[in-house]
Image (cartoon, rainbow, N blue to C red; front, side, top):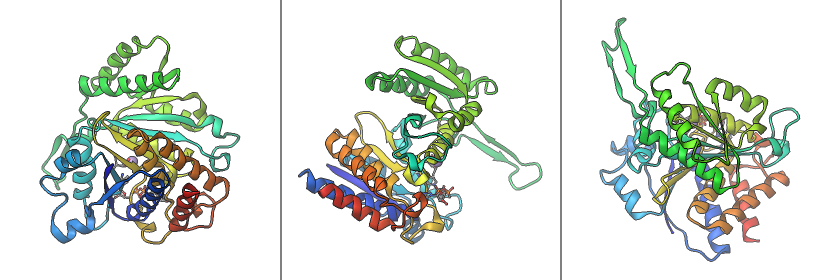
Length: 349
Ligand code: NAD
Ligand code: IPM
Ligand code: MN
């Protein structure tokens, strides 16, 4: 398996080193070769060369690799984060990675931030539409910088885009024996774009009689995620709302450092990354939690069909938590590298 590795910026570099360590250990334990090709695309690279990614960058990712692993992108030295837009959002768009798959699973009751809740209450997946919405940057500014400035940022919703993510959510539920899908939008206010979500959701849901399809407005969903997360199995929502609720999802798993994700076009080269960003204040200090990145590498292997390898990584992460071999954000006393070492060793055993 040939995998592109883009550590990126800040703690992206720190946590990617540990995910790579764990992937290598997994490869050795299962006698499988992972050809990990590091690409330097980052703020450093951009500031040095003026290049975010090369002209053939997207094509290269698509044609030469089975998967892409990303740490995080975002650096205060690049105002506007042009490089992050090109490298991360650009790859999502150019490779048409329309499924942002973000499982929210609490791995240990001790990590639960909610009173009287535990593993049984926090186990669902969020499917975030990943190629449309406000992320397309359609719009413009008029009289910029003056008191008359007008700023327009359009939200794009297409039948194709809405249909395929909603369908994916139902197919996932069906394939995994789940019986509940909840769609979240703001159709009470966004009477054009989200009317499309309403229509498509009803049409697709009718094709899945075994699945109970519910709807919540996104503000209510945000509240229920904290008050009663046990009601969810599968959530499907748009790009921006999905971004926001999966940070809540990160908190429900013990912290943003625990959350994993896949940016997927089924059957094509897809991109895997932790949900968190580059967290500049933590960068290079050996304190960032590498588990979200490590669990993202497990999602990557799972998507590539290496199920046993993926399970081995997940089990090793669970063991590390159970035995308090963690970083300080989730109550341990180890550094980033020491957590990676422990998990890698555990897999080799
Ligand atoms: P962030 O996710 O980087 O960090 C927010 C806070 O969460 C941190 O200050 C820290 O307290 C905690 N945190 C995050 N990851 C952690 C980890 N692995 N271990 C321990 N604690 C962790 O969000 P931000 O500060 O809003 O953004 C920083 C930069 O990252 C920005 O430039 C942003 O655009 C970018 N970003 C990139 C991605 C990505 O590449 N996928 C995702 C989100 C944000
Ligand atoms: C995420 C991030 C990105 C997003 C940023 C860095 C563009 O927050 O992957 O959740 O908003 O999608
Ligand atoms: Mn985000």
